[in-house]
Length: 164
Image 1 (cartoon, rainbow, N blue to C red):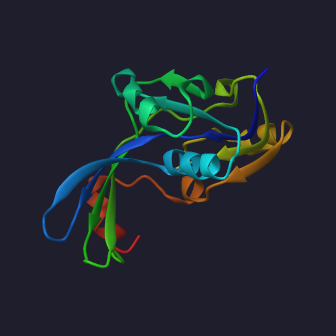
Image 2: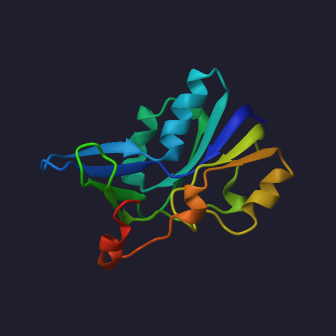
């Protein structure tokens, strides 16, 4: 059985950034992506569980964690967002969800040991109800609150998200 200091559960995203000057570019992101870099830099034995479209599986090669410690579950699409910055200082932005990957279920979590199970969610609904309680029986649980507080808005509601 594999043993980790931290086991991160969440989506790795392919996002679009729109700058105030009109510049647009894509980048990899999500709490899972960035948390993995921080954990590895701190010397933690790190594993990841992620779901993404099979054609995006190459993302596993850009994450700080070795492929043998990434547990990949294919799904129809990735979680993808557009960050539209409204000011040069990036203090005001509009966040638009373009697509959403399948949620995580407790049955998705592989048989691994970990000191900490990190739920690195992005959107409310990324994890099935009861996930925190179930994982707490296996180790400590850390939760990125964005995954429980950020609601999924349609593009029609995007104007309401200024300043998010």
